[in-house]
Image (cartoon, rainbow, N blue to C red; front, top):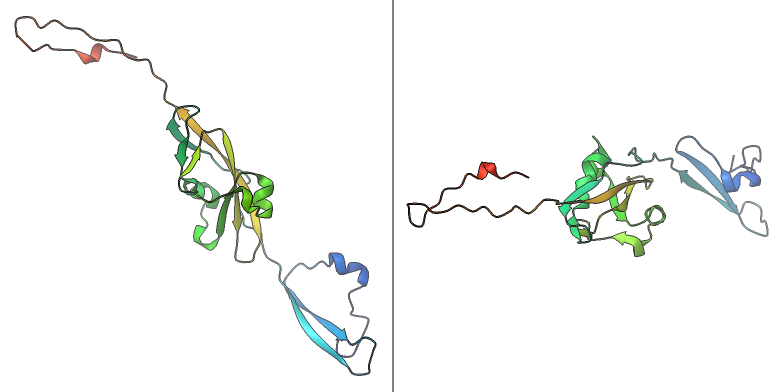
Length: 178
């Protein structure tokens, strides 16, 4: 139809900004010379590819490190892969980490986390993950980093007298409790 200039199969100009297809297809574009010259045109194919978004959860279980509140601990953000990819092959996707959802969605490199195997955080921080498949389609998921503070009561000193044996005292450490 593009070769013969048949207008019945043309995509209406009003649909050019929001042309919808449900599967990958090829459309043909007729390029005419302006001003029009008889038989002076070319027809070029345009492949329209419909890809699927990566099927990942919207949020995944967070990562927890042991440490002190207010003191940074290093997190390996790749430890989230098991929850993110849940049965998918992580190697089939490109994965990037960001500090905001918008940055992950738009690939704002100013907010990209590049040291993702030793990312320092003081905890209570959300990390956003952009997962892109080979079709170029992407999805964003998120998880929280948490510092589990070590809380304990310092033990009281235990005293025992030497008794008859010089330089030797026996202690029952099972008597020390929380």
